[in-house]
Amino acid sequence: MMKQRVFPLLILVCGFGFALNASASFSRIALGLPDEDKAQIVKSILEQRLSNHKVYPLGRELILSTENINIELIPNRISSIGVSFLKLDEISKRDKGNIRYLVFGEFKETDSGVEVELSEIWRDGIARGWSRTAYKCRKVDGKWLTEEGEESFEIYN
Image (tube, rainbow, N blue to C red; front, top):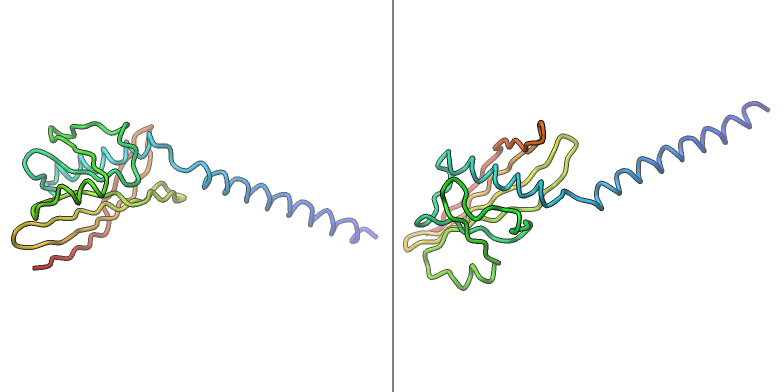
């Protein structure tokens, strides 16, 4: 008789726990990463790349695609370099055979923080190509720290 009462109670408790876990996971997916956090990550990554000379703006300007970011929260100057925010169709119109621009991929939340890829696409009179760098980001004391990961690239003549 005792086993008959314990089993349904066990199923009820496990089902409730599963429902709570699924609800928490769903709310994390539904809410997504706030635009303010994305902006801090973007700024941190760009400052890091500029200080390490891993990005070379044409003139004194970086062209940044508006894909996956809210440009209203990102400063138009980073490390004394001007930033122009353009949609991909605007970048295509500006491309006269000599262009370099950056595109952030989707921001993916993980258990340890956020992962994002930054692509740099360029064309000049001699060659064209792209590079892509993965970043792992985590928030410490209210500030986003970024760690550069794997990099891949390809150059065409």
